[in-house]
Length: 192
Image (cartoon, rainbow, N blue to C red; front, side, top):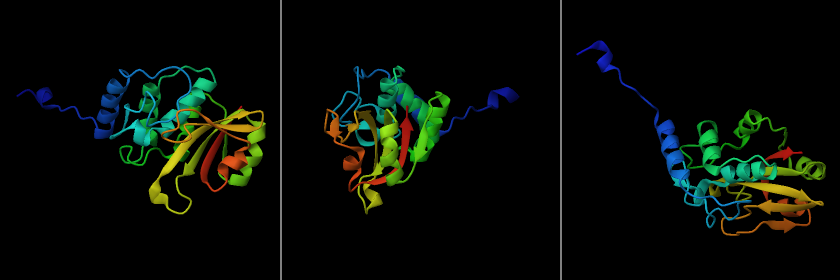
């Protein structure tokens, strides 16, 4: 046997899964416009890690909605492939690391402000066009998971995209404070 014939090519399981998911995802039509209702929308069958985006795609969807709002066309499949290596938690079982998605903003030269306190988030909202919020699904029980949403500031009102898995239209609140009432914020990213 020749020495070079014994060389094995190894790819880690996470990279193999990410590449397989990308090939699968790019075949699914995503539609045009903002994405809402991750369990009912066109991308719900796309995969992120070991699961369908109906379960864990909120972070990818929030990023897609941000890019759509900013006029930067990018597919859901491309976003998922890009952020998976540095953001996915345990093959996507727990979605994304909320504090790591800023790498996406940096790589696309998107200026942002990072806030972690609810009071600072509420006071920052009027100064910006939109934001991505990371929230716990339960105020007291972290085992119920977390959720990312994209929020637009429309005349001071908070228009929340992908508010829930089954609501297929954005939900409007009179203020960001009204939306955050009773919710436990983990991180906010604001954009001009």
